[in-house]
Length: 325
Image 1 (cartoon, one colour):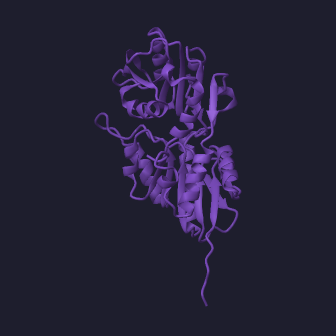
Image 2 (image 1 turned 120 degrees about the vertical axis):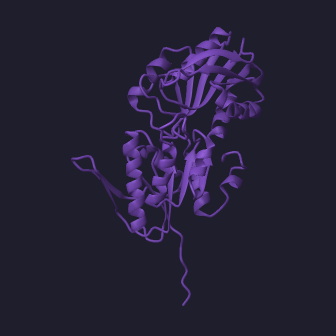
């Protein structure tokens, strides 16, 4: 007797950003699976799948934020371990925002490389594959021995930038020298000019930056500051002020990840930035919402990647090479 095995896609989410998971599920035409997540009085977490996942292709969506980053990460690890022990055929960890991505190297002695540690934990827990969006540095992919689908929100941002009007009046600006490559890609797609801000980060002081000068002509232009994330907003706000001082008519800030640690919202609200464009890789809580924010959805991007993985198709070919780094 010949057995015919039907592939089964199951999608689950933790507590970090269920709204994004629901949007992805709707795009895929499936429902977010039933899972019982609870926390004990001492803070320990527990999960139990509410249905059989034996032989299924399981996708566990959890952005490393929304709740405390450590809680989000630990919850995803526990969900992966439970899926592995429940005989899932393949487990894909979908991490729209990858926690600890900025700790990807040793800048000084006696420091950890925590981005590598996170990769090791996901691997040991049982993840067969990882999907993430705009890692802080692309070489984080090398911390894994299994496939990593590194997606970029660039096409979504490009579409939005087209609302800025005539590209001749637009300058794409990197807030530091390290982001010039990404800014150049966006500028090339739009046919806009490119500039960058030279910044100084005082040694040994976290989340403090000093913008010193602008490289490029920004006078009389709409400047769009592009970064992979906005955390405390110190970098982006200082760069925006410098651009205004150099004669920019208007300044927008654009980033994939809105981490928005305090006092980011207050800084952005009181800054010269007129528009802050982010994606929903991380949730934007009501207390941090201000009129300047425009939130774009990455659900279609992630859903298409999940479908490609499930169907064993090339993710890069589906996106024409543009949506995967």
